[in-house]
Length: 237
Length: 235
Figure 1 (cartoon, rainbow over the protein chains, first blue to last red):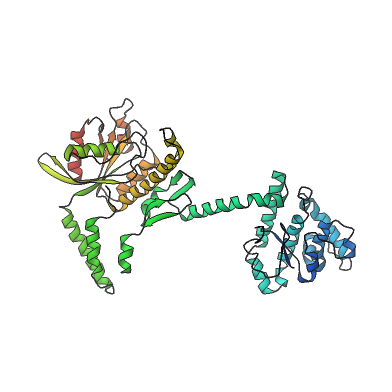
Figure 2: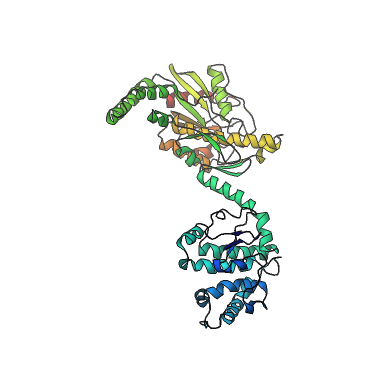
């Protein structure tokens, strides 16, 4: 399968919209992409397809398969062009150049999927223009290359600061940012009264004064009740 | 008891509903005429005077003092705990007679206006957390209501300040600014002159464009001058 959740290993067909709002099983939001021709490689415990990969560690093997399919992204990254005739060597050097960054979370994480997934994802997203338009648009709804790079850096930062693997840190922290994000979003919409925390409020007096509608009831979850201005009712009649 | 709708305004809008909606120009004309006639009739109607100010300035104490002096009734409970008044309360048809002249006003006692409400400030007043959080939420709703009244429903403002505290605050500056921008007649009262730290001059300096009247609403000191000024400003 072309897409695989890096947290639980569930796979999704290419173009699947099921994963657009996160993995239905574990809620994970990081996926690695495997082209259709390499579906056998998209398992949680990857095994290198190519003979030259078998003597490598699985992280490198995982990263290597997309590299073998597409040379141009690697060529962009590497200072010297790679000889087409020696893809394994080229990939090995590419892996070496990436290793200092990408391997940092490796020893800490129990699995070896996540760092590879980051590399694989970024490489494949850059390659989007070569793929089917529908598939590309399906992915573009979720993440852009810039966002992916940023997310990768965040994961690295989190894992290095918390000392736990990226996969482990994603799950417990997952729900909390969602709630905070929701509160922030509500607060942005609700400019006149900011709910700092239950029982703590900040009021924008000018906004309250300028509002035509009248806020008559607040609730801690960010909901509120307003009284519609008389004029609105009249104009509807 | 407090009101959210204005009887005369509701009637005015009710008339407009009888007009044909598609005749937009005529509707606008009728609106203008209604406003003018409304204004003429309003001369006989009581002026709605909002008592505004930060929390714990003595607004309800003043409202009760005025209401008791002229009607015998009170407006609402007073308390040393901030945000005791969390809903605007109106006392209608308060007739004040001064120098042979009668002025009838509706007093609107509004919740104290502030930019921050924190339940923790109530915990010091023998209140458990749940009650403090609820009071905080109601106080916030009260500020929203006070601002709404200021926008829609008052014809003049009595701005009450605690003369023992610094008047140079964001809230005071903003509210006075709004009142001035609305061209509302405003009377600034420097309350709590019975307290040792009272500094009326500081308030006068903060708002030199307005007349500042010292008083102690609690003790009833200088209320004669307050009533004279009310008749002068809002009559």
